[in-house]
Image (cartoon, rainbow, N blue to C red):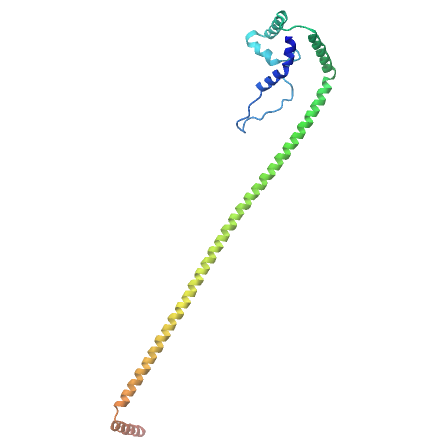
Length: 238
């Protein structure tokens, strides 16, 4: 039967409908986040979405959806596209039971399910908050590491300055060492020049004396001696 075939195809139709209304992934992380609806969408006649009725309003007015539903149901029944066999009446019985259960226990069941949903949502929110807190702690640790790296850069700069100062001190020490060594060498050569000059003067004086002494004859020496004696006698008288 066509009605039986229709009920058998309900799972595939629901799957197709779910695939049709599935939203695509948000391309950007800055887009609006999806939120779970708290209240179910409004329906009419217990199971027909209110949006389907509003779809007819611009063209047919308020009575359009009801007229369409009535005529379409009449067409299905008159042409025997939908045959009312025993499964139809079983469905009516099941529907009445469902309506009774919903009327009698629907509020309690809804409250119980809402409580379970709130519990699951609270657990998910707690887990989300824990993840956010953990990630925030990681961000804080990364900020501290960044601050430490900046401090390391300052330490490296100070170490570089110390190395430059050590190199400058070593350079100046080398300059002082070279100056002292060159001064010692120059002082050594100056002393050698002074000694050579003294030796030369001494040899020159000795050579002059020897030459003078060699040029004096015994007669000149005797005459000079007598002259000196006379000078001393004259001085003594004076």
